[in-house]
Image (cartoon, rainbow, N blue to C red):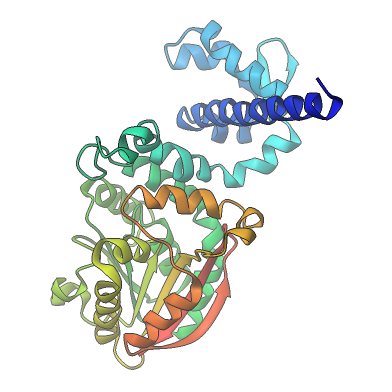
Amino acid sequence: MAVAEAELVKTGQDDLFQLAKGFYTTKALLALWRMGLIERAVKGDLEVDEIAAEQSSDPNLLRPIFDYLVVRGFLERPEPGVYRLTERGANAVPYCGYLSTMVGAYEPVFSHLEDVVRGRLVYGKDVLRSHEEMVRGLTALEDRLMGTVAEVVRGAGASKMMDLGCGSARMLTRICALQDGLQGVGVDRDPNSCAVARETVKDRGLEDRVTILQADAIDVANLPRDVVGGVDMVTVMFLLHETLRQRGRGGTVRLMREIGALVGKNGRLVMVEVSGNPDPKYRENLLFVPEYELLHEYTNQRLAPRPEWEAMVAEAGMSVEQMAPVDMCQAFCLVAKP
C-alpha cells in the first residue's frame, strides 16, 4: 500500500473514531445533565458514594461515567471517589441547555431516523420530540436571551406583554420583575409547561401581574379578549419556524398580522429566531446551524434566512424597527411595529 493510501486510511479511521468520541462524550454529559449533577457540580464536589445513596443507585455504575469525563477533560478527580469540574467543564456549563435542545429532545426521532426517512414512522404520529427536554434546555439557555429581550421590552415602554410559547415563564416573569407595573400573559398549549409556569409566577410573587393561559399560541385571534386585552407587546421565541412549516408562509404572515392587530399601532412584535443559511459552503462556520436545520427537517419545522423573515414581516403590514444579535447560536432578535 502506498504511503498516501495508508495515510488516507488512517485519516478515515481517526475521523470516525473522533465522531464516536463525540457521541459518547455527549451521551455522558447528557446523562449527568438529566440526573441534575451538572448543576450540582457547579456548587461543589461530586462524591460518588453520597450521590449513589441519594439516588438509590450502585456507585460502581456511577463511577465509570465520571471517570470517562475525567479522560475527556470535563471532570477531575482530586481524591478517590470525589470529582469536580475542570476549567473546561466549568466553561461548558452555561451552554449545557444545548444538550437538551439539540440532542435529548430529538433522541426519539433520531434514534429511528432510518425509519423516519423510509416513511415507516411519521413524525407527529409515531414519534415525537421530547417537549420536557426542550423546555428544560431552553429554560437553562434563557439567560443568554434575557439581556437583549429585556432591553427591547424596557426600551419600548410596554405596559402589558404577552409571551407566546412561554414554557416555564422564567423569561416572562424576570422581565416583569425588572419593570414595575408591567403586566404579563404567558401562553402555552402544553398543560405541564403551564403548571410549571404558574409555579414560577407564584414563586416570584407576581400572581397579581402575570397570567398563564393554556391555549394554542399560534391562534392569537381566538385568545380570550378579557385576558389579552391591552397587550402592547408580543414576544415569540423560537416558535415561528414551527408555524412556517406547519401553516406555510401564508399562515405565518397571517399570525404576524393578527399580532399586529392585537398590539395596535404603538405596539411591538419581538421575535427571536435562528437564521437558516441556504448556501452550504458557509455552513461549516455557523456553529451548529447545519445540525439545527437537519433536526428541523425531520420534525415538521423549517428555518428561514433572515431576509425571508423580514419580507414576511413587511407582508404582514409591519416594519422592522430594530435588529439585534442574540448570544445563542445564529439567533437574532427582530423588533417590528405595525
